[in-house]
Amino acid sequence: MNLPHNHNEDEKACQFLQAKIGDIESFQMVSSVFKQLGDPTRLRIFWILCHCEECVLNIAALLNMSSPAVSHHLRPLKNSGLITSRRIGKEVYYKSADTEQTQLLHNMMEKVMQITCFR
Image (tube, rainbow, N blue to C red; front, side, top):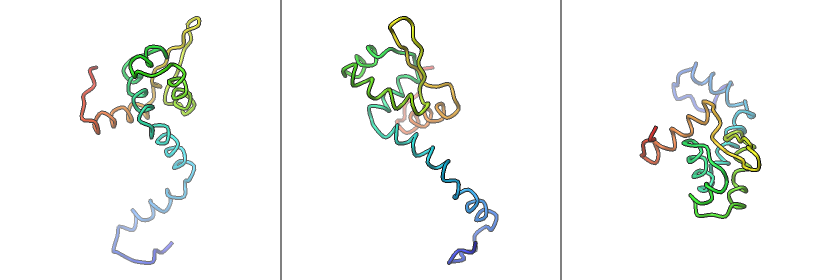
């Protein structure tokens, strides 16, 4: 594919971009993750869960929110694979998923917010 303007750019770089830009599914996946983290409350919940495993009641107390409101935010985070849960009796505990992507998102958040993780 020839672009309308030739800016004497690196031909290999242009070929690489052209090959990758058509992978719409990958861009949709990234967009979905960013959409989940586009809400400040979900960001705060995700950040908490990157540091510890917590139940809904404790998350609600930390954020000064109701348990149903926290549950409302946990659902899309879990559906997107950013967090996981485990049940012990009636209590459900949440934590960030143990993936490279969640670690990268956690690190990016802390770099942008200019804070250092206590771990």
